[in-house]
Amino acid sequence: MKPVLGLTATLLTFWLLLSGQYTLLWLSFGAASVTLVVWLSRRMDIVDHEAHHLSLGLRVTGYWVWLAGAILRAAVSAVRRILSSGAAISPVMHRLPTGTMTPLAQVTYANSMTLTPGTLAAVVDDEGITVHALHPDSLPDPALDPMAARIRKLESR
Image (tube, rainbow, N blue to C red; front, side, top):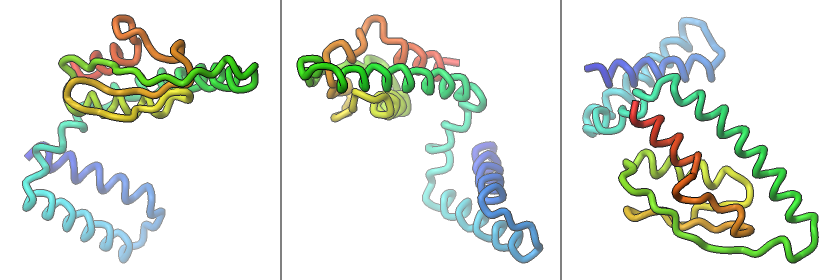
């Protein structure tokens, strides 16, 4: 029941923020659409399986702030490489092991890696993530990767 309430609250909040309409007619449309989506989700039996991301709550905000800083640092580094001599760019593909990460953590890691300028998650599977980078220095050291460590910490709480 808790995942259904969480899904309902999330959809209602999202709808209210995006619609900007607070007349009785529009609120009725919003309530009807949220009710339909929640009913379909329950009928498809995906509510309990897909609602675990709601448990991250406000913890993910700290990760987003850190990720914004990482994106900025990587952007500055990528621009320096691009504007310097041609030898500064040496594309490389590398496999980063994900170890015991859950599928949600793997997707978060791959998306975060792709958001970071100079790197792109090309393949994600059970063993790890294949990453394309502008230069070998752009790749994280698997043993010291702060992004992977933060994602693991985010999920472990």
